[in-house]
Length: 250
Image 1: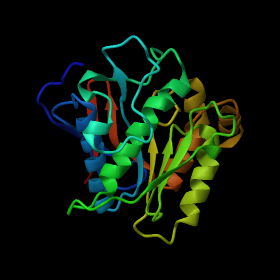
Image 2 (image 1 turned 60 degrees about the vertical axis):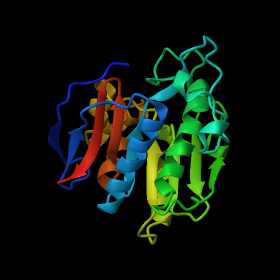
Image 3 (image 1 turned 90 degrees about the vertical axis):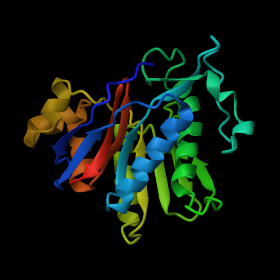
Image 4 (image 1 turned 180 degrees about the vertical axis):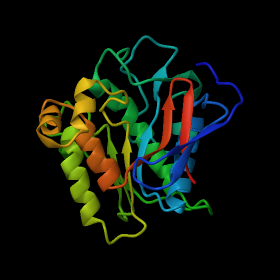
């Protein structure tokens, strides 16, 4: 993986109507552990500034020493490095078409990564034991869409992994249900909708019949509007290729 130049770049953002900015970090993480630390740190910093509805995009671990794409970290792996695969052989790669096993192969790499990020996020500064993290795969009704839901046993952190546009209603229902929990963090990790807009996405951002039709045909604009403008979800950590972006409050 390449690294980026030692430059920091910021720009204003108003996805959820609040004043904020994003900062491009001087370099991308060169290891799985470093990426986990960066993501958890960005999430914790955003939450401390009041941004508790978060979107995170990360790279995924692949064994660079093997052609067997189906071998990854075990989903119940503990934080101790002695219980994990040889981390030195792991490469960080984008969740793209190069994963021949499709979305479920991505899930097998994303699930243990998300679990580790949540454990890092919830571990207190004194090094105490973090809350237990429970996974619910029943949110993936087909069983093959690679969607999952994680939540700490104290209910303070919930995470949708690889959610679809079809999950937006359930996401918003959960947010509304948790409205009374002032410190509750809800994060979407690696949503399956595209970052780049096509014609349907652009049209679906408009009001009226055309916007509704474009949303019905698969445009993501309506779903993102509900998540970002109505519910206040914003990207707090985005790692794509050689670009590493973190949310900052302005």
